[in-house]
Amino acid sequence: MPRDWDAYYQGSPEAFDPAFVVRAYGFLLPEGEVLDLAGGTGRNAFFLACRGWRVLLLEKSPVAVARVRENARKRGAAVHALEADLEARPGELPPGPFAGVVMSYFVSRPLLARLPALLKPGGLVLVEGFNRSEALRRGRGESPHYWEPGELARPPGGIELLAAGEGWQALAYRSWAVWRLAVYPEV
Image 1 (cartoon, rainbow, N blue to C red):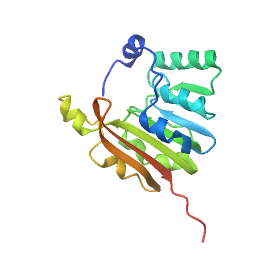
Image 2: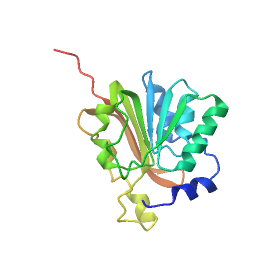
Image 3: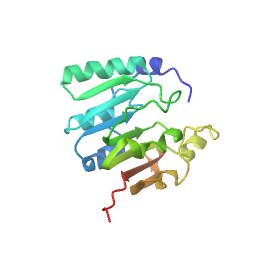
Image 4: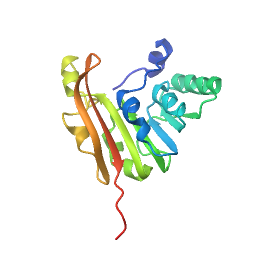
């Protein structure tokens, strides 16, 4: 979704409410560091940091990264922000392992297959975003930046589905899912 993210974040107020999936299922994350992909100004990162997780936030916009760093300094929060263009370079991710990965309102299908390698055993992926119904409602039916019906209920290989849902929520059509790195006992 080509957009001037710097202009967007310069003009946007602070967003403090985390995504539904983070608020509802974040407590299931194992102990450790969480990777927040395209984390914007840190609404999910600060929510998790206030509850004891360390968070590494990656974001394309230098304006958003500066805001996150300033807020982390002011709050003494365990949030570290780095500039990263995940659309242009989806392969450039920190190695992990992470307790969890957050993909909130960022659709990158090339990244999905890389998620298992980023997670520690039992690690979670918390993913949420607008779906195809919302794209149609907005007149953007052909845009690739929306999840397809049922797509989030089918996690990539090596990851199992814990919970998922889609439908009308907070004035938009949304999809969300909680995935876990499959952990099987050694035989």
